Image (cartoon, rainbow, N blue to C red; front, side):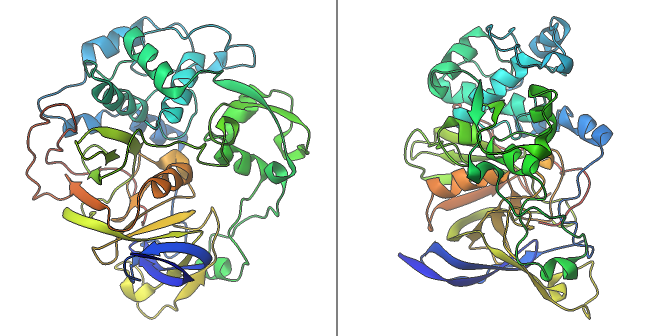
Length: 430
């Protein structure tokens, strides 16, 4: 195994090769991975409408992943019925009290935001921190309960909250952050949707300061605005104070927040049915949990056992129409510059299955709620956290990603086995 400083050509299954300049790439070989892209417009991570997102947020589809262990839907319904908060209650002064428990169902409010921050800091990621409960929060709670030796219900009760608080560490869940030059520096520019116009740019950076800050604090521009009423996010300067979730840069790191697994990662498990990735210890214990987006049935993620072959940070992306089923072969290939709004985000983890990888995204709000074109997508911050915790050679098991998959029982509580199902949602490549 060796560490290489090179320009690595990776073709990612999201339509393209991925190239990374002047970055440390750990590899036991220098593979050519492939990324495919189905949408010739280049709008790789087309976000669903708010209505579609809300429908998918609490669809419950992920529960089909479980066999002998079930989410307590009765307790979830009771939690929803007894919950008195709303999304409109999220405000600067709303976080001085303990959260209203239990949490479950279609709910939103300050208590949900508190839970999401703690889950994020405990490395049981809820995806984007937005104050809205949903499948991502439910499965993060469920598998945290499994990891902590608690009865797995998917409902955040008092015992689970106390264990989560201990794992996540002391400190507030919302903090005042003094903005630095790095926080607000650009350049910022609108990114064209046309793939060839993107290829003419120097980088696919952030389009606005609020987009950059949202990624640094694992949240959304809408939530930052709600926490900071009357403060225009497009007019921020170094030294300004902004109320933010205590995650990411506000929890001790730039984007990842310094999250670390509670032990050495021995292997990864990707569930297509459940829409999650687990970093497992040698004993099968869940060390880290991330919501993911995997492939639709027409272009599914791989099935079986593979390994990570290389890790490239800040990769470029090689758009190659010859690899794409839905793009005319006579279109010209193009090299898309690196950046957080690149189709594969801020990191690419190549797999031993040609044309597949694990990577970031430019649309964090879609993770766990939409579908990809075969690759495994995470939020940029979760992908970076995972990349820091593994190395080339790490085994990766894919389950529940093909119709031919045969699932076994969840067994013992260390990991739940997927069952046969088909991922659903709007299609996007990679």
